[in-house]
Amino acid sequence: MSRQVFNQETQVWDVINEDLPVTPRPTSELSSNARSERNSLLSATDWAAGSDIVMSAGMTTYRAALRDIPSQAGFPNDITWPQEPTT
View 1 (spheres, rainbow, N blue to C red):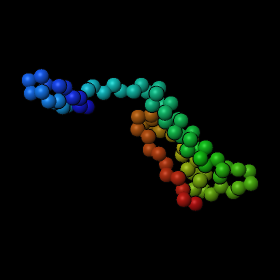
View 2 (tube, one colour; view 1 turned 135 degrees about the vertical axis):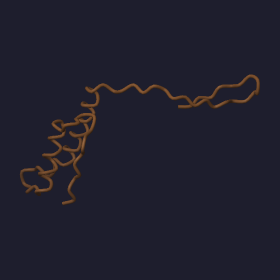
View 3 (cartoon, one colour; view 1 turned 60 degrees about the horizontal axis):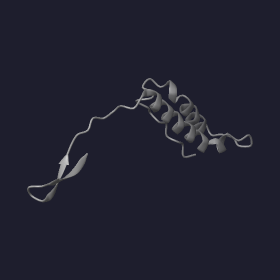
View 4 (tube, rainbow, N blue to C red; view 1 turned 90 degrees about the horizontal axis):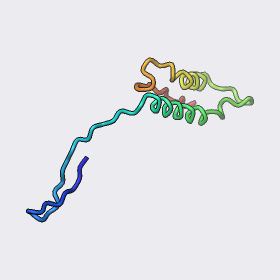
């Protein structure tokens, strides 16, 4: 991060670059954010789960992978998001 400080001697603004400490986000926040993202992705494919639609094998696999995200070994810090099928 950088900030500007007025230098009285030179009468110009100096840019000071500083490394600020990074505060890690709590696991509960990461988990909640990941579940919200997962739920959004599932909601976006709810049309494929309608009773009058035959869901493709790819979509079935994708939706199952989304539901399984919280059981991934690295959750919530390291998530492998599945790719939505094209058909």
